[in-house]
Length: 113
Image (cartoon, rainbow, N blue to C red):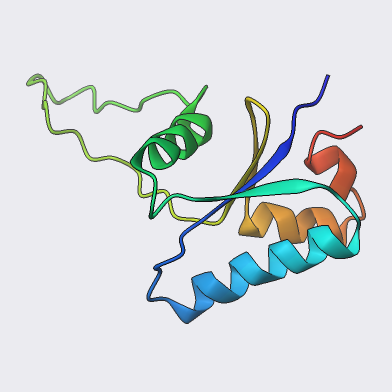
């Protein structure tokens, strides 16, 4: 069962490339008549945490076996908008979205089929 497609964006990104990618995803979803919700992670810290949680859910943490000290300030993977989810399922980022369009399996990518 699928939830609602969510596009996580950053409304205050200084990067023209990120803005362009966010707009491209939004335009493509509208063109395909796929209903979606846009969530601005820059204005909602809870939404940012939610996006990060979805992206990292299920990914194993890689620890250096030679590092005997437990570093409490582990390096976190940088997760940037845009990211796409369907309900509680992470779909992917911009590159994944582009690949799904190229492979003509956007609905599968968005977990709508």
